[in-house]
Image (cartoon, rainbow, N blue to C red; front, side, top):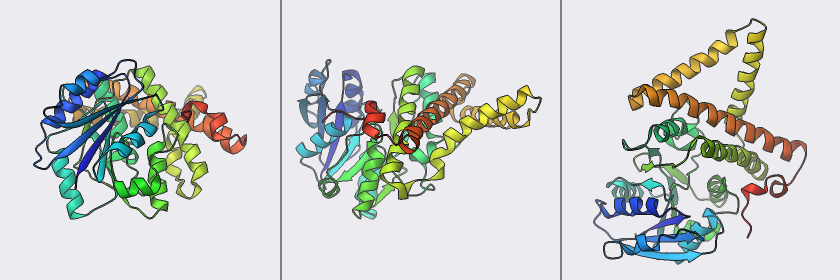
Length: 332
């Protein structure tokens, strides 16, 4: 089996350098290829890629900007392998990554897999806090990529494997972003393919974002979910409502405090206390534990508001997704 790494990049040459450096250090005996797709960047990474021509089987393509989904499809069309591994450019891979993937697929083959993400010690305090809020079982981490307990697993495209057969049958990623990865997972299920989490196939996901960018990201996640529920109603789950219900419950608890009924508010204080302790145990830092509370609040607020807005637009006002939220769709 020949593995092809598919890496779309947009204005992030430094990230590509770190990622490619980690691929060079792989503990893996067989050959693999790397396909870098420059998605219309103003700051290209061709010079960075050139540095690795002698140590990696690597190819580089520049194309007009059309979004990460289309760029991944472009890369898979150009790749020579029969199994594609799709990565975000802000990832760093441990040296055992490909050996773990190959071993898992040999023991129990699946046409699409996903892996979780972790934080390196070198990450900033905010990066570690955001990583905690995005991966912890105390938040929505179990649904996103750290657990198989919530229904069928939907791989995320920062760390996703896809067979050539599944790609050709599904035509790859759609035009929505974010949301293109669960959209692909559901279409694969409908075509008879299976998906699976490989827990040991983790990446270090750097997420070079500040609080404002993090809010924008999770807000778009929230907006995308009702669109997927509209397209695929049989895969709708009550868990998708949790951030919105949490947000509404928190506002309701504050109103009750005004009327001297603080008991519901104590529940939320207890929850944030659990976030603090969970992050403290994991990261061994009071500062990161405090930031983890902030990250969780932003995550739930951003996602919850986006979900409610999209739900109202689609299911109450009966707007079409593309007209209600054009910011989630790249022009073809």
